[in-house]
Image (cartoon, rainbow, N blue to C red):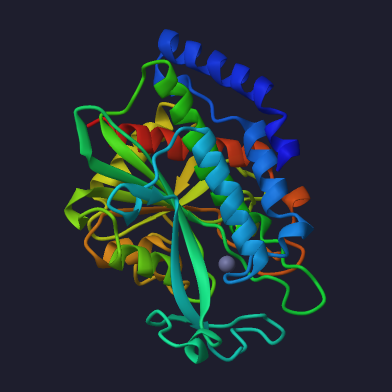
Length: 349
Ligand SMILES: [Zn+2]
């Protein structure tokens, strides 16, 4: 962690240069730093975090790392701990159910379920704790309205002798959220602040059944009516088999209430990175069921319009070989910029 923070100075300079560009040529030219994305991703997917399984030391250390970064970029803590204090961390109790094969044999998979907080010492031995992390960038005249940017940072841990690094799933989305927060903070430092507030949220508990986001929406520090949309990023650093020849793409998945969000993302894309935005999986009836398989689904369930950004699947999906060296960082940067541009437009109606 110290090693990362020593590299702050050149990064800040790069971002300040970007802000100068923003003023001269408009927000469409703002870049999300590739170097920042890469640093976060290598750290999150490193052996030392042991695959970030929810309830383990690796997950807690990843949460601490993300909190330090949110703090460094002046985000505001939103989880009230008492009348005059708030935390970046939201901790929830859960239990892990028997490990069951999921689809393929040898696939390390277990289900999690939220439980009430333990009341006795005996209870507490069976209850695990997971953490969500969130930070708020406060808007200007519409600051009560909140654009949510989310990703899960947990992965499968170390079920056997090998670490499941989860570089694409989902150190890529986590890095994108951190780097976009840094970009917006850098703009805010130059007096360019969005009208609406932006909430950056990193969930755990995703891999065992989306329980981190389930707990978050049930115990949300904001009213559901304040949440304008959720832009969720889960797996954005790789290329699937269908796009080997033309890798500049991103799958977009929305819901029945996402039409204007889709249109905003398309406009943002045309005016900036110009990826191919593929609607292949953009239906609740799609047999892959991606619409139900990441944290945006819990926002959809409480009536918040959602848009889900992802790269599809590849042979390293949910394997120990999903490692940081296999990520396409140019593409990760373009997709992070697409999310930034979409979020910026949603935050400036
Ligand atoms: Zn996964």
